[in-house]
Length: 147
Length: 107
Ligand SMILES: Nc1ncnc2c1ncn2[C@@H]1O[C@H](COP(=O)(O)OP(=O)(O)OP(=O)(O)O)[C@@H](O)[C@H]1O
Ligand SMILES: [Mg+2]
View (cartoon, rainbow over the protein chains, first blue to last red):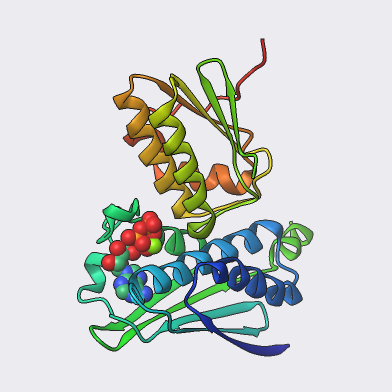
């Protein structure tokens, strides 16, 4: 099975819940485990929150979330056309944050990495950021049957 | 939103259903106002009604733990579900601050 969806919404904090719930609902078509859905929800929440807080720090603009399902693979992209990240490697280090003043603690990328199989960050200062994430889901049951 | 409950010197914070960037803001504002104006030596974050937390919740807890340490008080978290336990464990929050992860038992 193959299925795709795209969401475009304003970068306001009310939409953090909307985005993670919508993606989680879309993914249920692949019969993921509860834990896998929780993982995806958290990763989407982190990426979307980053776009809102860091990508568009002072203005409301559009965030685009795409999800694609193919076989047991979930691919998710979260895009903003905001300020971008000057040093992606550094930004992804655990506990690195540019906004300690907002009580951010630099864990967002670490959670995305922990909960998804793959994450790739595409970013350029002044142009924006796209987070690409992948995760295989719904294989827990098959695994149990086989063992 | 009746999220704060005061019992003697203990403040219990009944957290909202989802503890993300959006929902932490009001919790932070209300807890900080209480810590500024009332005598509190024990702060409990009760996750009974909370289904979801992300890094914003960790930031909230770390910030309040720092404040409680300055007040020479204690801080607890209680009744976390599996998703929230995993987030807490991954964050390493127990190592960086003295966060006592205990269920509060009524005596
Ligand atoms: N979409 C984005 N646009 C611009 N900068 C970003 C974006 N996403 C992340 N960053 C930068 O990367 C840093 C690390 O992000 P990460 O999510 O790991 O931590 P944080 O958001 O600062 O804190 P936390 O997620 O724990 O609340 C951020 O502080 C910010 O500087
Ligand atoms: Mg973040």
